[in-house]
Image 1 (spheres, rainbow, N blue to C red):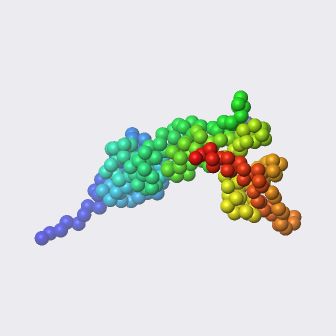
Image 2 (image 1 turned 90 degrees about the vertical axis):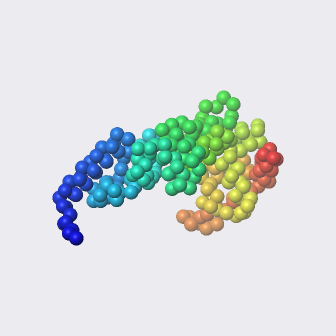
Image 3 (image 1 turned 90 degrees about the horizontal axis):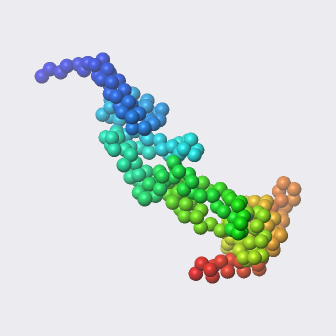
Length: 235
Ligand SMILES: [Zn+2]
């Protein structure tokens, strides 16, 4: 039995060729591979590079939204298989992954939220912005149904409709569940804090002084009434 020493030069040449062909093929598919993966591909024979990292980019941000590992064998079909890989690697359903992929090129799928006051043209950008693929479907649903009054019409909304914006109602709910929580715990901004006090929706108590001063909140009767009204409407 004779064993031939492997022709290292020939193998290296084949590898370089394979990597070049491979990268050219990727480019025609519109796949971007990360610097680390590029290094991996260059330092390993093609057969050993089992996965490539596909960067999913968002047009509206221009940045990488997430990185998905796609088996190299599947690259010719990577576009149709991408939702499955996203679903498996980011714990969401295939449908959510498809919605996520649609949103990254069409950010308008998450509409701006309109002030609920008739005739008002003020809008607000939906927040928080999606972080995980599974967030997109939920945020689209919320953005289309969210009740919101701009700062000009928050008072009128309360007077005429007996209603507050969803984010204010969320704060009131947390306040009711944990009376005495501070502004940070409740996510109360200066503007919202002023509104809650002026409209007698909540009562503020101050502890400490100067930079150590802290506001603690308790829901007032009117705030509690607003919440029961909302609960009754949702039933
Ligand atoms: Zn308005």
